[in-house]
Image 1 (cartoon, rainbow, N blue to C red):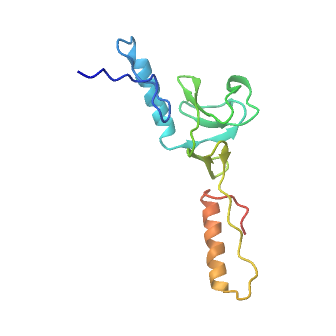
Image 2 (cartoon, rainbow, N blue to C red; image 1 turned 30 degrees about the vertical axis):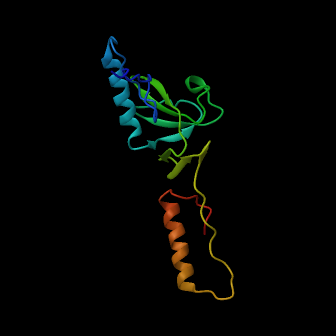
Image 3 (cartoon, one colour; image 1 turned 90 degrees about the horizontal axis):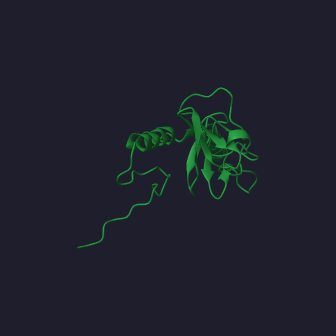
Length: 154
């Protein structure tokens, strides 16, 4: 007979709490996990700020910037989620992506939060195809408008 499977106390990807055999009041752990899933599923944050906003609603998410203050002290780069009238923090993992509604931009976590940069606009060259240049500039502008790359393009 094989040994029983031993589970950690949290899930490996986003740190959802797991139930432990014989645990009392399981509904608290399950409800916390469901609230975290609900908050992170769309992967949308309200803004990137260093301190908890005054006016927040249940489920609001924010990226914590440095230097974090107040209830967010020590949580730099984390995602703060308002659950049950209190703050829970999700530690970002390599490759995690969120959309920042206040800045209208996509952010990717690669040891720190980054926004993909825009490719350089086409310039110069011996032969210039104005239609191709216009199409490339249009593509760069569309990607920047969608928040997928920085607006440092054309």
